[in-house]
Image 1 (tube, rainbow, N blue to C red):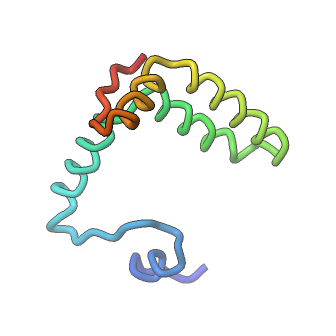
Image 2 (cartoon, one colour):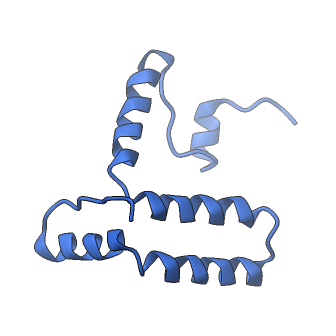
Amino acid sequence: GEPLTAEQALEWGMIYRVTDDEALRDEALVLARQLATQPTMGLGYIKRALNDSVSNGFDEQLTLERDLQRLAGRTDDYREGVAAFMAKRPAEFKGR
């Protein structure tokens, strides 16, 4: 119940990054640009899995993640990611 500094939360592994107030906008834009290059369906599946993990039991969560990975593996973006990796080039995801 005691206040926790951002630095302590970082040290404990509760968060993954700390940014000074002055750099927050620039850091947020860098993150937004990076996310914009990712497969949007895959990001949506990740968000769903994280949201559902709050109320799911272990077995239910594993089943959900299995099902979501199966769906993700059938997307055009998955095929593009594999092709880009094999060709050693950046992927160009289309959100499909």
